[in-house]
Amino acid sequence: MKKYLIFSTLAILFFLFGCEEERALRLQPAPEYYQGRALLPNGQQVEMPESDRAAIIELCQPDNAAPTIPSGERRWHGTVTLTQPLTATTTSTAFPTATFFTVENKSYVQCQLDSITYVTKINAMPESLNDFQDVADAYPEVAKIRSAESHEYEHFAQEMKQPIGNEPYPERKGIEHTLFHLTMPFNGEFELTFTSAEGEEHLTIPIHSSRSPYLSFGLGTEKSDDLIEYAIYTSHDQDDYKEVLRPGQADISKMLGATLTEQIPSVLVPGHSYPLYSFTFMKDGVAHRQNVSLTYHQPKLLHGEELTERIYETLNGKRHALFHDLALIGTESKDAPFLQHLAKEEVDFLFRAIERANATSYAGTPAPTPYLTLFQGVCAQTFDVSYDGTDVYVTNSKSGSHFKLLNEDAIQWYRLFEEDRT
Image (cartoon, rainbow, N blue to C red):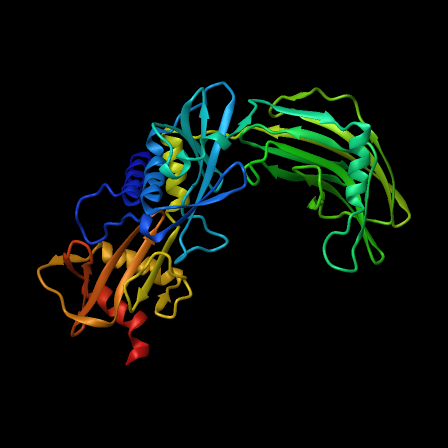
């Protein structure tokens, strides 16, 4: 079983990075179908040309992933997100987010694909980032925390009184002595744990979502009409505090107050839970008590066989296919009228049918919808579709090689894609 898994894993990586021999199904890296945008530390966003998009796909290959990151201050140079306008959905990521940083003047890229994190040492940054070396942000190796000073509490209270959202504005109130400031390391996440007699609830603060080295957070309440809810309010610059972390059952009738717990150290040890404070509120005429603690979690850097297997599991199901009347331009919207997107069952059939098609020296007459493009992970492949009677042919649009589907697959092809035309 393990031998089969290793073989299958290598096969999918060949699909992803274009290393297999010529045959009908031969997907290749396709930077032309991506749009790329880099977020810089100064907040500026830079569009990435196709040459940089291709370089990033190459740099995030998993085979050279490192087991650890060297010690030392890390300087963030930019985070690149690649999207496929033709296939992108809100629930599916086809390519890792690539975050570029340096340690001791040596360059690295951290690639994040869903819950998979891996780091690779690189020789050079993408060219689009070279002109912005002077805006890199420094991050500490460790997570640090401190309690707010008196004037910062006052500022927090005033910011919470500012109108946020739409009229009628909710009435917000900051709870005294609950404000803390985090100095965040380069990666990982923070976890807030709310503990009561009813159980625990966990809220996550991911670092990569903002790439800001600092975060302030404090407990507050928000009243709209007759409803009062409590939440943790956060800010990266101590203004607004409009980002909200709220437990599932946070409605109350009255906040009674909060108490700081024991003094916490300035440096947070990864994986250790630190109690911050407890607060008491009234709900349905009963007093309830909540304890709040904070934990910093370092990411697990994957490498070697484990990384290969996880990427296989993640990208194996990220397939998409579409028929189209016109040649594709990668920046076109997936809603273009000449595109016909296919359901998962149809996509699975196409991959299976084309994979076992036989090479031939000729093709048929162009089909009514003459083009088919398959996507998997970071790769794509376009075919010209043609018919000869009941036979179905697909031609590799780049190489010109022709392939004929098996008879049973041709019957299924007509049933799925041509019955409505007749």
